[in-house]
Amino acid sequence: MTDTRPAPLPSPSPTVPAEASDLLPAERGQGRPRLEWLDICRGLTIILVVLHHVTGAGLDHAPTAGKLYYAVLSVNRVTQLVVPTFLFLSALVFALSPLARFSWRRYLSSRARQLLWPYVLWTALYLGFKILTGVGPEAGQRLATFWNPGLLQGKGYFHLYYLLLALQVALLLPFIRLLIRGRGQDAREQGRRPLHLGWVALGGAALQLGIYFVNLRVWHLNSVGSLALWYVLPLVMGVALGAWPERFTALWARRRGWLLAACALALALYLPSGFAEVLHRPLNVLAYTAGNWAYTVLAALVLSGLSVELLRYSTPLGEKLRRLLGRLGQLSLQIYLLHPLLLWGLDRLAYPKPAALQVLLVVLYTVLGVGLPLAFARLIEGRRLSVWLFGR
Image 1: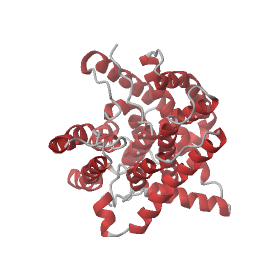
Image 2: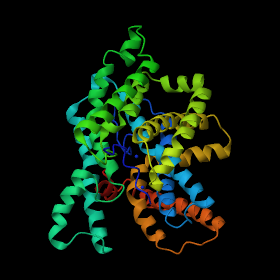
Image 3: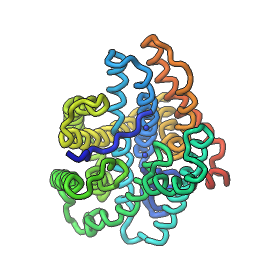
Image 4: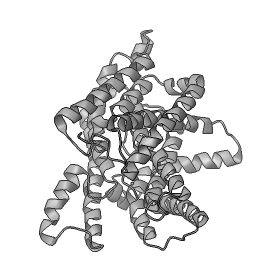
């Protein structure tokens, strides 16, 4: 059977409302409300991205089949929610912007500056990094490798596939939003009801399964994790929720218990397949893929809901936490692009054998993997160097 499972976020493996710092940036100056919980959610998610990569590398050092190995593996599988979460938030924010003010020229120009340019630049930089570290292509193959599989397949480095995915999604979102034309704010003014979320979820799931079978019978792609159509469900859900301001927060207020329970159940059903995929055990590919979709979409909703909950804490500690997560969210692209360089160096240090020390090392490397890129991003924020490196 053709392997149609999504390529897992590469082990040792991205928006939201901040107009100038989004992994998939939204329109500027559109009169869109700035929702603090979205920045917070993106901040939480970028921490989970780094944790996912740290635990992926940690699997190479933990004793196979031991308790520590399965603990690290569990965290690694749980954090697979990160890409669907970023895409869900991107779709939600994009749907919030008024249809009447949409400009293809302005939209494509901003994507070229904030996505295409960083993608091309960092593909070149990471190719140079691989050459310097002795794992790059031979001299005569470097230009060809930069083009393909570098740019065309998103394989300039293990994490750059996301920017290729984000570019595809940036082109898809305007067309997905056409499905809600006449709804959203305009429909609310006319007294019309939005599409029922249950039907949206069923329709999105049916479309997602259809894409699975098209790949199985027609495309035969073994690695589909960088294909935007593989994430139709979180994109459709994000658009449906973003078309009506405050619709998500209202959903979370009414259904948080059901969403938490459904997410926990989906995770429990998915983990055995997730373990089997990493351990190269016999695997039902359809069950694995469907389980991954169900868990990650529900987890995106839950993580977004927990970000809303953080706004309720008005204590000094809560304020500091919200500010920190908000800054992480606003600088998430910078952290995303920089952290693999740091983790590459940390991974070459000796790993202690005691399990407790390895757990502490995972925490430490995650903190460093987030904190040091954050410090650099803040140091050059607002300077021309930041625009050249990150498009913002």
